[in-house]
Image 1 (cartoon, one colour):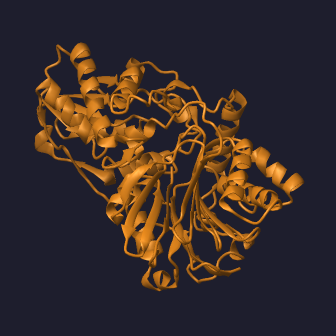
Image 2 (cartoon, rainbow, N blue to C red):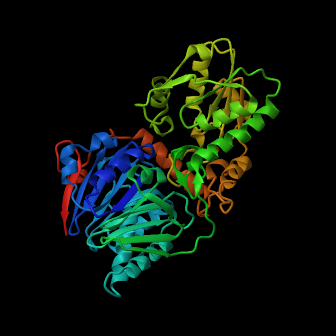
Image 3 (cartoon, rainbow, N blue to C red):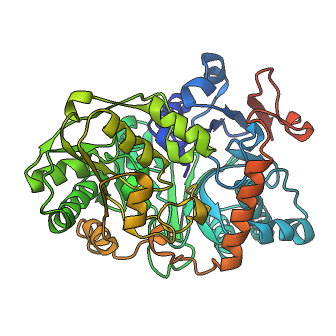
Length: 516
């Protein structure tokens, strides 16, 4: 899960890209980067850290030009090295920068091809660097036939689709030409297009979520379709082409459950409304299963679960109360690196309001239960605050399988629901009862908002991978790599000699002017 944005404007875009990244910060807190262009040059700044910390006034002044792309990252494939902050850059052909949200499932094979056939060098462990090199190679091959045009670019993207498997929502810039964006043929990761008309002509933005468009004052046009490429030249001319036919549009269902902001609209669907619908169907299950339990209060585990919890309380005619105060300066716990760090961060992140728990039977609503570490700590906090009984309901089904398309859930053994019953999960968490959303109810609650959309990537719930290339050997491989990474993890800000070649300032920022 990362956030990407690209803009072609009639005025400098540095502030627009910065403001867009701020509202996409929830999609990645590990690193941030911006690249702008004035046509002949790329101006780049990127580093590990939050957007507000990575970019200072001196950096913004150096980001010159009326077009550019930006990226916020949390790492799935690759590492936390500053050298792997995005966007990535290659100088041939033409000069290309690229930011990527998703995960390539055949990156190892592509790396081998890069070395043996394409004669291109991959310098990091990031699959995004693989992706930009595939794009660069295909642009070389396509541009041999004629001068570079939008049709030649679309031919290159078509070839890329035939080589790359997995999930990818991409924004890129080709120097002296314009902005190129495309989305994988299943539409797993989100990507939307916005436009605004000005006296000087139209301006365009492509971003991971519509909330970025709202904040920047652009009108949401539509989603980038699966298998579609968008090209916007530096004069604001808009071109699009369906480069490959999609089998079935299957967006990641976890975007609606947890990842996306509630004020976003993805694939024509209000994320907020889907979470209300999740609460409706969850309330039905609770009423059936716990009809004899005397529940006094419904309390959300902030923040994502709040819409679902509101609907549960409304449907069950039970008081809704805010029982936890959230420290907003602690990152999302399920993407933190280790169980010990994750466990400690829960107590730092949430603190109970004791009067809402004391001598009450409490129903806690969470958006999902992934590893269970957070849930166990929260149930314990509720008991310490005086609750008589603590019930826990998840607005999502049990997370039983790894997500291989860009969400940090790679190991089955880390998932509390893997090979466990609800009774066993309840015992491990320490609750008086645990209940989950039904997967069919979850899907129907989303589809009712857009009846055309009936298929989803719900692999983390049902183990069915829409790209049809995920084998048991592949899952074992990524789990082995994760185990090796955890045991041999170097300090987050340590850098190799190769990293040093990319770093120009004393604080490890990557801050370059790239002349072409």
